[in-house]
Image (cartoon, rainbow, N blue to C red):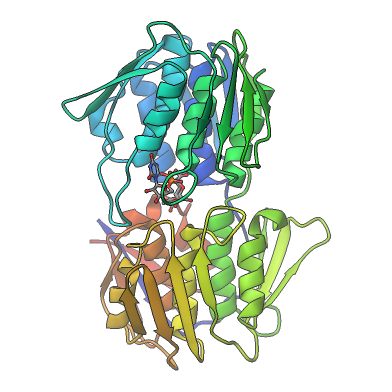
Length: 425
Ligand code: EPZ
C-alpha cells in the first residue's frame, strides 16, 4: 500500500488541468451496455473506481479498450451476472442494474457493502426499478432481478429520507430508456453528473427531458445506437484544489485550474468568497484562479442535494476552517456520519467537536504533522489539504482511498509546487 508524505509550508502556484468527472464516468460507462454498437467515451479519469467499472464491463462480456483517457466499449455480447468480487469493491457498480435490465431483461448484482461515510441502502433503486416492472429477489446477498413482462413506463417518486438519490435516478433513467411507454421520475437528483448521463443517453437516441430538474420524463424507444461523448469536468476534484488555493496558494497570483465548469462550482465558489478568499473565473468560465484572502473567516455549511452545497466537499472545507480564525459549523444532512477526517485532523492539532451530524470547528493558528490514516475518498483529500499548511511532514497512509477518485494527485500537487512524495509501504 502506498503512502503520501506531505512536507508542509510550501506555497502553491501555477496551474493544472482538472480531469473528467469520476461520478459522471461511472454511470456513463455502465450506460454503454445499452447498445450493441461501439461507444467512445473521452476524458474518463484514470482512477481505480473507473478501472473497477471497466473490469466489470469486461466481466459482463463487453469488449473494452482504454488508451489514456479515451475508452472504447462494444457490448454486443453480454451476460447479466455482475461478478461479486468486483462489485463488492465499489458501490457505484450497482448502476449496471438498470442497463442490464433494459438490455437483457435480467440482472444479478450483489448488494453493495456499507462504507465509512455511512449506511448505503439501495431501497430507492429497487423502488424505481420495481415501479417499471422489475421483479427483484434478494438471494444470498445478491439482487436477482428480471422483467418477465418487459419494462413498462410509470411515474415514481424517488425521494428518500435524505432527499433524492443520484445513482438511483441514474439507474431508473437507464432502465426506462428502453421501456415501453413513458416514465416520470419525481424528486429526481439534479447533479451535473446526472445531466451528463442524460445528455449521453439522448445522444444515443433516447428521449429524456427535464434532466437537471426534480422531474425527469423518459419516453421509451426501441433501441439505442453508438455514440462518442466527452465527460464533464470533475467539480469535486476542482473544488478540492480550489480549497488548496485558498489555504496555501501564493497571495499574489494564487493557483489556476483549467478545464472547469463555472456553473457546476457555484456552491463552492460562493462559500470560498464568504470565507474571505478570492475566486475569479475567466470569461469562458472554464478556468478559475483562487487566492488566499487577507482576512479569512469561519462560516457555516449545511450540505444538501444539488444545487446546494455538495456533501462531497464538506471534508475539504473542514481542513480550511481548521486553520481559519473563528468558529465554523459543518452539518452533513446527506451522510450525517461523514466526519471520519475530524478525528485524524484532531491528531494534527485541530479543534473539532463532532456530534449528531455536525462538526463545530474552532480555527487554530497552524496544524502540526502527525502520521494519519485515510478512511474514505474525500476525507483522505481533506487530510492532504491539512498537511499542505501543517508544520512538519505528514505521512498519510492507505493512499488507495485517494486513488479511487483523484487522478494522479501527487503529480498535480507537485505541478503546483507542493513538496510531496508517494512512497510504497
Ligand atoms: C453519489 O452516491 C456519489 N457517488 C457520492 O459521491 C455522493 O456523495 C452522493 O451521490 C451524494 O451526492 C457517485 O456518483 C458514484 P445517493 P449515491 O443515492 O448515488 C440515501 C464520492 O465521494 N439513499 O445520492 O450512492 C443515502 O444513504 C461519492 O465521490 C437511500 O436512502 O448517493 C444518502 O443518505 C461518495 N436509499 C442519500 O440517499 C437509496 O436507495 C443520497 O445518496 C439510495 C440512497
